[in-house]
Length: 467
Image 1 (cartoon, rainbow, N blue to C red):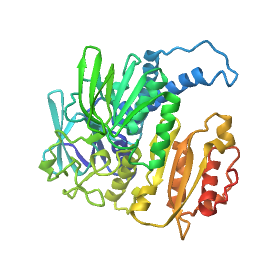
Image 2: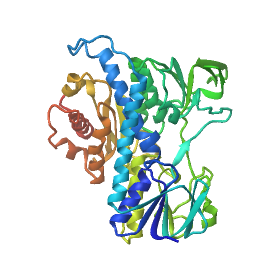
Image 3: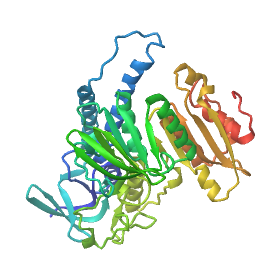
Image 4: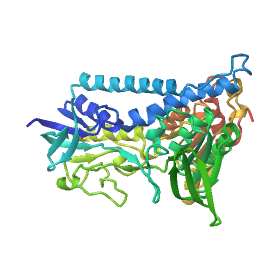
């Protein structure tokens, strides 16, 4: 029987990063993955492939709608969806090969198969009717999540699909009905809207991306409707979906209680994800889950079993790859006897639509709920010279700061390259900077990040220079 210091179950961003950090700290480490490919949902059927398709579809959209204004005359471009999918697969392949290299570089053993606990220290790995048992002093569960569904809806993976199938379509849908106005639905809806699909979004809540600042969802809804022709059914409840041949009929209950039918050729169910612990036999290790299926942990991400930790989508908190990575490092360093720390308030959220959406810290709604006095400042991208030069004038940056101390409490932006720009806000808040601090830092001109400086000027003393 092979013996290890640490066994990591699941090779997604949380798992493989945890394994690397454990190995760096001198711990004999094994990584167990049930699929043939490392990288988990993020690298194989999530973050990376969706960004590849978002990028390809954005090129097509710009060629159709913006090249002529830039003085570039071309024949009307055509969509080659099979080549787009093939390029996406290439991106995945290269990325996964990079993870394989990192495992070898760090001398991490990799075992493929389904892991299940026999006890708190013994794990059986099964694959193709064969099995082996290993012994591990510590275990990190990073088994991730899988797409959730709704009562009354059967996902057939052909016409009623999840994000996994949406990333492999071999045709551009005529009309895609998306259930859920969150990150996954809006990103994949953007891909196919740019390629020519009619997109209808059905959302139970009164706004899009409801976990983020309300102003972002409002602006994103406006922009997606204006630029890509999205149709939105807000505060509508989906009661069923039926496939007939090559069409899907989705039954909806309106806010007034009336019934409505939407007809399309694909229905994307994007109502979030749920923790995946199937077949792990965690009870044999003395571990339990909460009412939402999440593994119960303490503040140090330790389960009821003192030698077993859990991270990422399988525990409470936002289901974000970078959150899982931070937790992987956090647990590895604890096992090695260090005293790491994570500030969950400073883990940014991003939506990779165009314009991009990003936020970190407290939202305006949270500040109001806490009855905390605050100041707010904003700056629109239409006033940015860099944004005008690139024809990316939708959106704004909003900065929230403490009314007395001027400390930045939250930054929320929708605009070009917001996914990258939010890092400045994270750094500022990590060091508890004031809006005045950022306002007095020189930002290169012309750049999108000048909008962050201007929003801070507006927040601290209403002295923005360019509005």
